[in-house]
Image 1 (cartoon, rainbow, N blue to C red):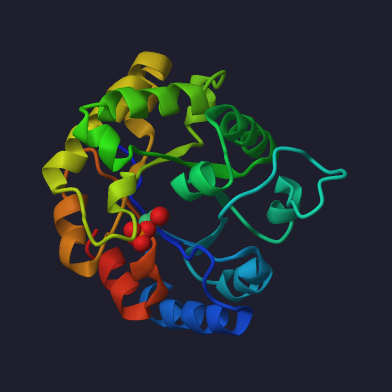
Image 2 (image 1 turned 180 degrees about the horizontal axis):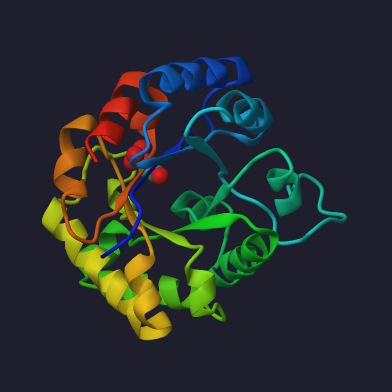
Length: 251
Ligand code: PGA
């Protein structure tokens, strides 16, 4: 547990034009731009990354992308390479979000390729895992999450894991208003940490594991007080200055 950093990341998904993104970011700078704890990361759409990176460079807020492609350059129309993100000041990249797995057919193998290239390029991946409602109801949560962890992180070293953030996001809780109780979430977080420990040894204690899925100002403190929940990946509530600032301050 010692030395693990706490993180609150806002996943803006496909929301906010550039002018809207600038407005939201400026509001956040005023409210939480000087906080030293926890680490705050904003993940706007690609079109706002560059502008936000500029606006935020004198604050304590970091910038993350929501995706990238697993190649350094080339004929991949419509895709974005990690070096393109790095050179505009992006530090983090969300990989394997359930929406990408579901709507864009991303498999653990694809996610694994992306993670490896992100690390090689110097980006810190925020790797998402989580089960569907029917899988939870069938008692398959651990099996599903273990498969995603093992598949997504295959071939990484313990040193690599020093630069990885995990987000546990039960799919049934994303954007639905249904949150896992702090105890339910902690149980899976503990399981994830044990799985990481089996694969990577003591480095697992240093890996931040974020909870995602309808995190709101009202439930954030309860979730974040659990021993293996090191912060949150926040969707809907990250689109409002007040709500996101409250969540950040509740760590
Ligand atoms: P939500 O999204 O907070 O709107 O549930 C979380 C996420 O998908 O990262």
